[in-house]
Amino acid sequence: MTTTATETSPTTTTAATATTSAGIAPAGTWAADPVHSNVSFEIGYAGVNTFRGSFTEFRASLTGDALEGVAKVASVDVKDEQLNGHLQTPDFFDAARFPEIEFRATELRREDNTIEGKGELTIKGVTHPITLEGTVSPARTLKVATWR
Image 1 (tube, rainbow, N blue to C red):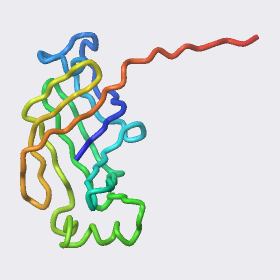
Image 2: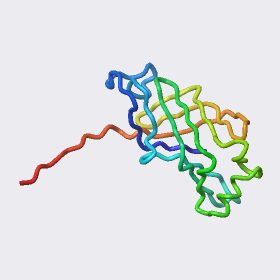
Image 3: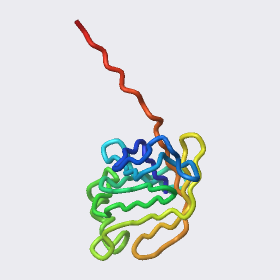
Image 4: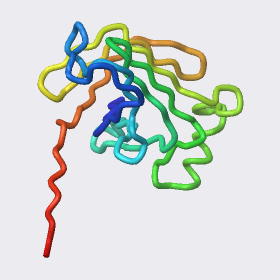
């Protein structure tokens, strides 16, 4: 599973120029911006193709060195309405009994704009170790032009 967060935004700011002890993000609590971020997955299919999907409803936060995220199973999108419905059943995610997928990082590393999170992924009440990769967009400066 690959999770890509293309941009984050601060929900609270405390000394925004300081970095965490691991240098992952500026100090404060950061939340994934659902408009500019995504949670997606890729699965090898039949040895010749890659099956892709995403979750459109999710939340994720980064506070210091703690990264946590939750995706709503009901929001899975694989570009096939019939399969989207089948993924909700006990054959796959069993959304009625397990409405969320959870991730908690136990170790975070950052190199340039890439973050690697080693942690635990819980699907259908079963937890397994996993490594997720993400990107943090560099800060941008908005330049405003005045036309006369």
